[in-house]
Amino acid sequence: MDTAQMERELRDALGAHGVWKLKLRTAVNTGKSDTDAATAGRDDCCQFGKWLYGPSIDSETKAGKPYEVITRLHAEFHQTAGRVLEMATSGNKDRATDLLNTDFSAKSSKLTMAIAKWRAELKQR
Image (cartoon, rainbow, N blue to C red):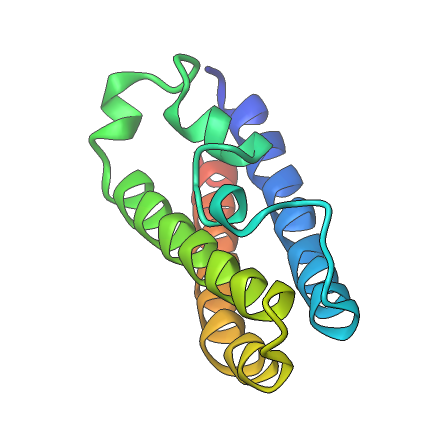
């Protein structure tokens, strides 16, 4: 995959994962979601996860530190999203709100910063 395509995938991931906070906030407020907690908790179901684990990224890139960091943070992001959604849809609004505002926000920020860093590194090539 060329650098420009990787940069586009990372840019799109930033936008898509930004939408998760809104989805989770809506689930907390309504107690409902169109995504189940088990699916939300998986890092290979979203478009970015499919790309990360798919064949378009070469083995050299997958062996690199940025890829290692992003895949770990992405997995943590989704695991936490799944827990928030589980709490939200099971009626535990207070715990879901707390988890959304603490753990999820922290995981989301770390992932966003790591993706932005990887994008910047790609642009310098």
